[in-house]
Amino acid sequence: TRVLFMALGIIAGMFVLVATAPAAYRKFCEITGISGTTRVASAADLQAVEEIAALGELGNIEILFVSSTQPNLDWKFKPKQRTITVPIGEQAQIEYVAENLSKTATTRGTATFNVTPLQAGRYFSKIQCFCFEDQQLEPGESVDMPVLFYVDPSIRKDPDLKDLRQITLAYTFFNAAD
Image (cartoon, rainbow, N blue to C red; front, side):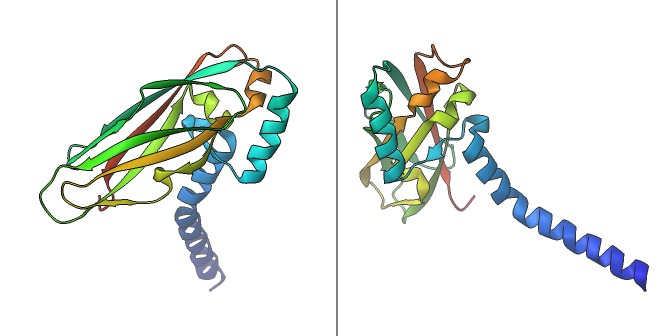
């Protein structure tokens, strides 16, 4: 009986680990910036960063925007601007445009994203992003989707990134049902 309960306890523990692993991994990537995962910033974070940026000249950094859609999602998706140059520590906004090319009912899409170089993900903070929730577009509908972000000034203290001049933010849209 004791062995049976121990075995059932181990199996139950494994189910719990499997169920919580994706959320734990996502949070771990968000905190560390591993795999190019960006941070989600709050207004308080932005205010602290802007105060640091105001103390000294940190320079500018170019942000390159890339987009793609999975073949099974009949959407056109692209950034309005291919690149922008922003002062490090200052808030910036860009917009992507998505258009539902299908002639059928509403399609639901969701976006995944990453930043390259991968180490820069921990310094790239998004305040607002269409990627935080699923998007719904009616047939033929086109919509502007803003991204509000900043690059954390502590990127200049990272020995591997102190001279970095360009960050790429890439999005891929896919059908949320998949």
